[in-house]
Structure formats: C-alpha cells, structure tokens
Length: 183
Image (cartoon, rainbow, N blue to C red; front, side, top):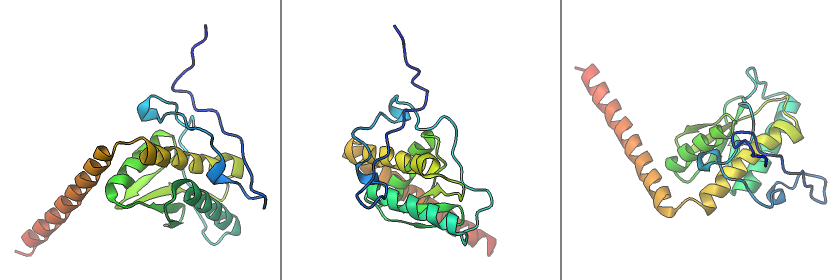
C-alpha cells in the first residue's frame, strides 16, 4: 500500500484552449483539491515571487501581466488591475476577503499580500504561460472557488467585521498619535 505525501504539491491540470487559441482559464478545472489549510497539498513546492527588478514598460512584462489579469478575472469573477511594478491587484468586496485570500494564496506557495480590499499578486517578465502564469491563476482559482463555494457565510461575515474593526482601530491609533505629537 502506498501513501501520498499531503505536503507534496498538487498535480497540474492540463491546459485548455478556447477556439481563438487563448487559454480557456474559466474552464480549465473540472475539480479542485482541498486548500493546504483544509489538509490539501499546496499548488507549488516552492514560493513563487515576482521579478525583483520589474520593468513595466517591457512588452514581455506587459504581456505576462495582461495574461495573469485576464486569467484571474475569468476564474475569480473579480476585477484585476496593474498595481506597483511587479504586482497586479485583485479587488475584493471587503478587506476581510482580501486578507483571507492573500493568506490562502501564500499557503499555495504564491506570493500574495493584502492591501486593504486588494490582493496583490506577483508578475515577472520571465514568467511562462504553462509555468508561473498558470501557477498564479491556479492559486487564485483554488482560493476564490473555496471562498465562493465552501466557506460558510458566517465566517465571511466575521472576517468582514474583523477587518472593519482592525481598520477602525488603526485609524483611532493614528488620530491619537497625531494628537499627542501636536501637544
């Protein structure tokens, strides 16, 4: 009897293409394995990070960013736009969702960070379609699928409230700190 290593990265889904030759990101997956936080394997064995010296004016970089944004939009049903060099941002309805997604995506071994209601995801000119681009899109597909389909509404509501309270607290601390420094 063989046992599988639950920490080993998941097998890659085969690429599917639309009739125009573009990747059919929205129909790539027949099913999803569990997220690492639910006992499933991470998508990647090692952390995927962005280009340390990105050049957003490079046509290759722009093509990679465009394809990542197109793929993320198709799998998440959420808006995506260029962020700082080396990053694209996925806009969530509230900061609680952004924080949850960023943490879950990092557990898939893809760099991600929450910036208020946005999840920032890496971009690099050296990314390939069947490699890193697919890795970013797959991590977002898995985590947003889990958020939309499997996470109970009570947990989503609690995360939204927690994020609002954290933001309220940060604002209060800033006000209090600025009041003290003006005395």
